[in-house]
Image 1 (tube, rainbow, N blue to C red):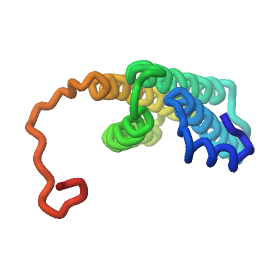
Image 2 (image 1 turned 30 degrees about the vertical axis):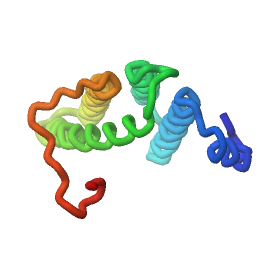
Image 3 (image 1 turned 180 degrees about the horizontal axis):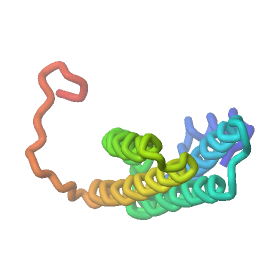
Length: 170
């Protein structure tokens, strides 16, 4: 894995490319860096995070890294193919679907403040809901990636052909 040598990385990408395992390493590193960046944003508030806040962050990070590793294995591990393509595309669609669920849950729990529930408790409930949606995301991700890797996607309807002239049509 390259950390500073951009020229070496570019040389490898243009000659041999990266193995699936190396792609996973970059993805895990990015996930960790983003999690760290979001943590720093949390410290810009009025007071530093509590122990509960740190535990939630650590749990979220472990769920994310664990989910990535499970998805990588369900894709075939080191001998799997197209992991990043599958992860990025399926993750985008699944993330969009689950974001609507999370927003409904977030607004529902957040409205408890208007009924006299203490803000710290509401914050923790929102955190637990976020972790729950995160777990659901990774559970569904590994399922879909495995279906694709095994060549047996569960289609409930016949796929439609793209109209003439559309991207990807012959």
